[in-house]
Image (cartoon, rainbow, N blue to C red; front, side, top):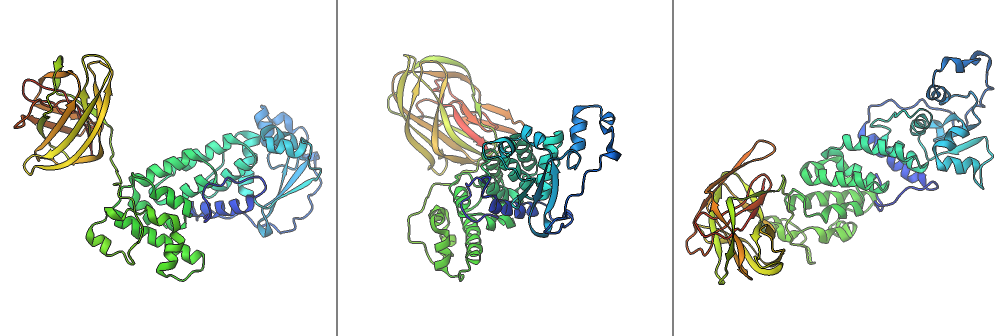
Amino acid sequence: MATGSGGGKPSNHDGQEAASNSFQCAAALSSNMPASAPVPSSPPPVPGLHRGPMYNWQATKSSLKERFAFLFNNELLSDVRFIVGKGRQAQRIPAHKFVLAAGSAVFDAMFNGGMATTSAEIELPDVEPAAFLALLRFLYSDEIHIGPETVMTTLYTAKKYAVPALEGHCVEFLTKHLRADNAFMLLTQARLFDEPQLASLCLDTIDKSTGDAINAEGFTDIDLDTLCAVLERDTLSIRENRLFEAVVRWAEAECYRQQLPLTSENKHRVLGKALPLIRFPLMTVEEFAAVNPKPRVDYIDRPRCCLRGEECSINRFQQVESRWGYSGTSDRIRFNVNRRISIVGFGLYGSIHGPTDYQVNIQILESDKRITLGQNDTGFSCDGTANTFRVMFKEPVEILPSVSYTACATLKGPDSHYGTKGLKKVTQESATGAKTTFFFFSSPGNNNVLLPAMVSTTPALVSSSPPTLSMPTTLIVS
């Protein structure tokens, strides 16, 4: 695996190191495939072409594709040969300049450009024979022959010779075989080969299965830039102390690669810019007590959010009316649910007088304990329609089943629309068939009552008693 910067893109001239990295990567995908038959480092002379037995072979091929496929890896009519690989693994592979130039701008420049080669044999020590044959097969016949043991080296070769269609097939193959236990290895390669789509899919897989991903062997092989790119994410689904333990394992592996003694100082040294990305304030007191020696720098305390599911809207109101006024007191409603969810915000009704801005404080409280679980002092703009407008919490608020909560909103602004004919019970079924039910109750001391919401498989809050200000709430089901 690469251990330098993960964002480099292999060129046509510095491919040896990148190819070596790819070979190791392919071995990680599959180690059970037989190796190519070894070839002497000094290949024997190519024998003369025997056209006699091949007389009228063209008549046996009914299409242009069949005729060109017949010429693949065939000395017949070949006018160039490649010595592919190095040492005892090198292979001599015949080819046809016209076919190669028609399929690749790099080959076209090699044979027909201003500095075209005149050599009948071209050495390619940085390319693996199996990958080069996969490239040629594609150029001759459009056939795709890639597998776990060759996909990375084929991707490298396709990029080197500018064959984007084959690149796409390699990325598609990797995407289909992407799992938590190879996500880090593929992420490093995606960054090395400048494949942002594959990199994004790897990061999504790491987000969803962080624990399994960091326990895989490939995690300790990633380079520092890739490690930092992962640690910067807010969407990792893992406790910070477990993430820190994995980072320590990576630091130990890096010390071994750099032949450094396993001391705390050396671990800090190799971690470098990655260490401040560990969010030590998210650890419990007991977890932080186990960190030794204690860090001496400021660390991020922003929670890592790992919400899953589809956000959707819940609205209890059956009708929207005009002119609800604000006097500085809160609109609120009590509610409970039958499933664990997360509320990420409210949907609030806006002005009846056209586009305007509101100042608002939103809160979620645990009713019995009077504990504020989440709040935000913010504002929102409305366009004068009877729609609701999203007002979000800084962080999702976890809601547990069968616990009473109170949703509150205090607005400053002109008269607004509001909801009426609200239901006391709202049930929504998710795409997976899971049902989430909301129960709504009046709240002591309320001025108005709340209303609709957005949820990841659930609807929104609404008021339960007559005059009601619609405060759509956004909820995400875990």
